[in-house]
Length: 348
Image (cartoon, rainbow, N blue to C red):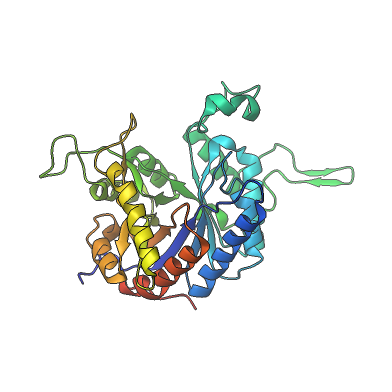
């Protein structure tokens, strides 16, 4: 097996946390149990997706607050919080509080842009300020500054019996270095690097950059696009090649899967593969092919992936609509077979 340029150092997973709208508690409980299992299996990190007005986790910070009390070691991340739905000052308070509760294990990932279906939700979300809201990088900058200790008020001191601070409380000193930007374009990668953030790259990128040798004009391979974005991020980051990048892909090992599970996984991948052939929509989004097979086969695919060769941290995404027993099998195989095949060792 050819080695990667960066041996795998950190292994994580990502879950959406689906639930039944009629009875939402069991789904949330399953998410917490999956995070607990991840810690038991030695994963370095567990990440939760963020969904609004859907049957997935709408409040990842609250879910991770619960997870801090049921785990002791595993790092807890969001991938990602869309800041268009958030007030950066209030979010900074919530993040710092959960980070304190976790003992410094929180890894918040964020992104920018208008809320999805903004025209349908703006009257409920921003009834008076919809046209004035900044949904660009300035919103991330506000969060960064506040988390890192910039003043939020021009007053501190005592007023009557009340004591006031001029910055977000509680202040968690290390949290500012554990903020991640979830991006899929060269501009996002560069911005995150210039502002000293970590970089989350997933199975969706924007088709941009120079044409790949040997490919038709105007077409690019997903792996080379993602590799170029990682390199652009590190070129702009003060830490250069040491700047942290985590890659997220859907990877389904079948080593201990039942015959029914193997058939289910194969059908899932086949159903999603056509979208990976060409850029999709006006944004020209490229989707990574999902990977399914034995851990030996998957390790071979990953070692050949141009972007995987650039990273030493991954967060493999669990499919949205699988059953808990599928997640248990996948995570167990990733931790006990695929991870070691990639040179990773489980945390004690």
